[in-house]
Amino acid sequence: MVLDALEQALHDRGMPKNVIHHSDRGVQYLSIRYTNRLEAANLRASVGTTGDSYDNALAETVNGLYKTEVIEYLKADWQGLADVRLATLNWVDWFNKERVHSALGYVSPFEFEAMYYDKINTLGQVA
Image (cartoon, rainbow, N blue to C red; front, side, top):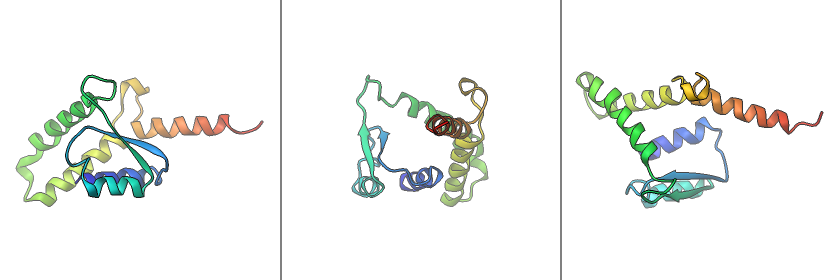
């Protein structure tokens, strides 16, 4: 599933190059297949340590939201693993592209990122 999520992120962002991919020390993120895919996409891996600015507190918060909003709330409707995967992909898509966030001026993370890059591109143009 983590490879599927990585592929979705790569495609949603237009196959970016030379960026840093940060994760915790979970075995799935340190696996040979995953690290090979990061290398093939020209992504540099970064793994944090407990207590530093790169620890996984944010990831744990997101995982908690996921477990509450998807796993616990919807589980009665699932017929199998394919249903769990689809529910997960739908939630991640909603979380990144539709969910509004007060700290971002009540726009989605996807919209905020697009506005950020539009602003950078506009500043880089010669008048």
